[in-house]
Amino acid sequence: MLLQIKEIIPEVAHWIKDEVENSGGKGVVFGLSGGLDSAVVAALCRKAFPRESCMGIIMPCNSSAQDCRDAEELAGALDISWLKISLDKAFASLNEELSQVKAERDTGLAEANLKPRLRMAVLYYIAAVKGFRVVGTSNKSETMVGYFTKHGDGAADLFPLAEFLKREVREMAACLNVPRDIIQKAPSGGLWEGQTDEGELGFTYDQLDDYLENGTASPGLKERIEQLIENSEHKRELPLKFARFRRKG
Image 1: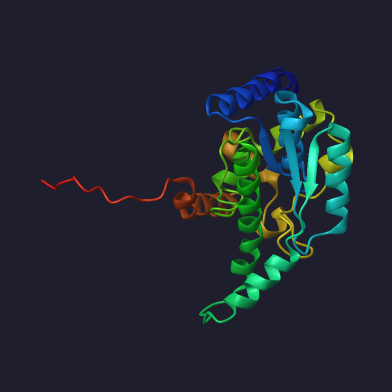
Image 2: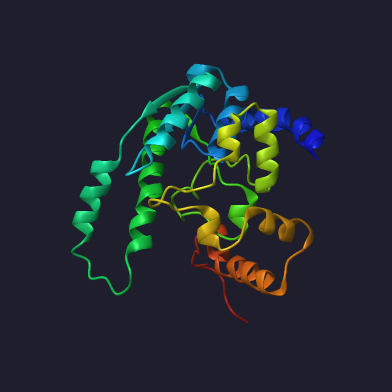
């Protein structure tokens, strides 16, 4: 498997370059979180474009200081251009304005999801100013169970990792010389302090990948994964549109 992943990396980088240039883009911009997926996307984009056309954006939003340090060190190691834009004040201000909305349920997840949506707004602003395209970091494992924020990290112009399982992204990271600390780091969306992907999902990525790849899972785990896939179908589809000229019968 590692050999296959190593062989496909140049193809993915070439695809990124072609898709961006075919759409009239001059380069790429992406979120740089200090995590595995964004590190792999950054490395692939750097293979596709020179430093000045490959920009990672570090966007702390009540985030871990270690994540920011990891992101900065990675940017230096990969020789990509980067900016740090703090979203702390914007997040706090927006939450304050939204507090007037009557909450009929727990607002924790709604507030947490503001973070990736604010980050995507920043990425598209920078893309518009520079004539770049936004590259997303979601992988197949996350996408299949809906573990992403709609119109947040689920929004981008292209997703180079969308057909790769989490374990394959780890293999890709090793081939791309991503620092071991980042590869071994517990996956987290940084939505709140101590949050991890696997803790929130209730199973490991290895368990999920085993099921997605070959159907291997205990009955209880299979049921949970299938339920997540079904419940998140709307997140993987384009928005519904009224078919004006469709007639019944």
